Image 1 (cartoon, rainbow, N blue to C red):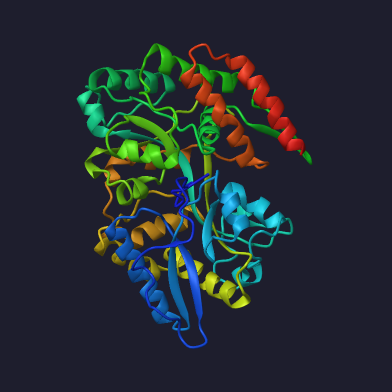
Image 2: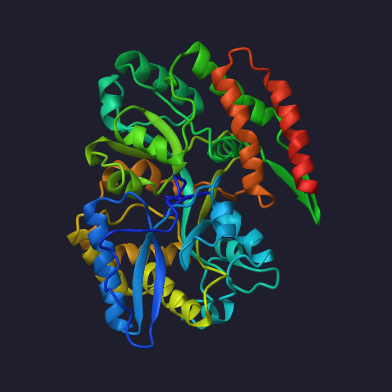
Length: 452
């Protein structure tokens, strides 16, 4: 899942085809040139917008035949299909890993694989990452631009107010529960909160299921079996139910999606929540979080050989409605704006310097698109421009590469996530919710979706 995709990401309200005032870098395209509409995250602060404008100007200086026109857009699972069908998306936009294979199979995005194959790093992608944007024949229709592993985000200030050590975040789910109750009792805000809507409820339930050793589906060749109704998923929902109804540590809002939970966390209304590990950029640029409040650690994993951390990421794609000239321009933009800073030192330094000078964050942790060594090298390139509180993220950065990274379910992912939203909502809003029945019904419905 989004997003921010740039993680998983990222998942908030979709603003359809609304040009961001002031972000088109020129009024008219060059003679015989191309005007390319490209996605920019909705709700960015002035510094992030300025950084984008500067990067767009740099691109146009290198490609005088291409004019960049920005369009506010952030992927949302509940509205994306309608926007896609309506043709209202920009020429270049982003999607979560989970959507790639389905859109490719249905030819709902442009086949840019021949253009991507000509990029100098086309053969260097981490194969576990690249596959999310590949057709059945292995051709690369979508470009992986960011990857993430889920993390536990926490508010250091609330930890201190509750008498907890922010440098010693919880390492087990029992400790998460205990810390959440201590925060709630001491501060009156939610010690722990969880997403439940816009497909994010299923996303986070799957994350916790993985962390306890469960899986959402079993794949055997062409046969896919739903495995929602398992002891691991029951344990997840039992834990959530206990925190909600016995501990009273989850606050009063049980309809969070990705955007709204980020906003609540950034404003100090939540002590802990689970989301993509690289979410700091969104919290800072779109939700004005105080950097001093921020903490990040890895998810607690059960002492089980099957336990792991859910990983995902973001693909950059070109609209199926784009002309050949727009497709070519789109791949040039993807290469310039998203990829060169990961693979080329000069481009990385230029991007980091431009971003840092605008006040936008540089250096928030990500998972490697290529390999861990390349990622480490790229971090060295930009070290002088890193302006995020990395020392407050070391519980995550010191251990994330030690955790088994597990891909999201590969079949009907968003449909299954949507199916699970009301399950977690029921547990959080009905003290007498029958977890066994909820899971049995969900598994039966999921199997029907998988068979469809």
